[in-house]
Amino acid sequence: MWVVHIPSIEHRVGISHSTLGSLLLLLAVGAIAGMQLSGPLADRYGSRRMVILAGTGLSAAVLGPGFATNAWQLGAALVAFGFANGALDVSMNSQAVEAEQLYRRPIMSAFHGMFSVGGVVGSVVGAGTLALGLAPSVTLTAASLVGFGAVAICYRPLLPRIERHSDDDAAAEQAHGHFSAKVLALGALAFVLMLAEGVANDWSALQVKEDLGVSNAVAALSFGAFSAMMTVGRFTADRISAALGPVAVVRYGAMIASVGMLTVVLSGWLPLTLFGWALFGAGLSGCIPQIFTTAGNLGSGSAGTNMSRVVGLGYIGFLAGPATIGWATQIVPLTTAMLIPLLCVLVAALSAGVVRRDSSTTHRDHS
Image (cartoon, rainbow, N blue to C red; front, side, top):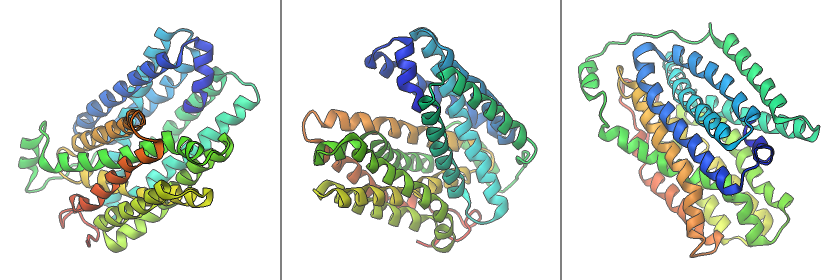
């Protein structure tokens, strides 16, 4: 809902694109801070409590951009919005790991699929209210009320904190507060995959428009194809993970994504290029959920902290991807710059073994 209102809010506040870019950086800083704080708090007080607090905070924070009247107010609002969003991102993924542990089968990708559905619904509703001429303050107030309602409805069904004791608890607590090699490896894998995803989000339509010379409306089909297959793939990845294991999901998913991006780079025909972007989305769709689940199962006493670090590193990649492509286009054409996400997914395919889990936390883990 925030994203579709960015142009309207930028116009109302009266800021330039460059100023907006700086303010969006503040949002990112707030998000990373929220991620790093919420993980240890989830470990200490339980992810259920943090989901409620972060969800309530996000529902309130979404009002800020809608009512900001100058750059300073918008900047403060985006820091708060980013902080709450980052805190919710980590805490709800931690809660999802706990739910998956009780189900004793993979369900994480389906949660991410619902995230994709929410993005589609929010963008469609936001576009509709803009077409009706409603002010962002009105629409974001409605979104805030929906958020508060969702928190109230979900409060009871969320899992309470479950104390788990195992033989490696002492080692986990000793490692608490430090980046382990496993966490760093998972974070690096999340970084390259989310970098590739960030490139698709921000540059897919521009790549098609520049490379094939089509209209803006036709070029937008590329991001639609990518997003649609990301959503579909997330609702099917759990079954694949249950049958073949998380390593296979990441390895073969990244390979499929590499074929899709290679198609985009080499194609000069619109249908084939759109197919390439769709294939790229399908391949990426199930990878990140496997990484988050592995991070959440690393230690009984530091699951939230591990999650916050991996999600944080991935989010940095998501932000770095679009910027990297922008810098690369100063040297090479945009389509050639797409070799960067191609390289990223190839690295991910080779590094897929990082998501292999211990037998105690694995449903079925074949490679």
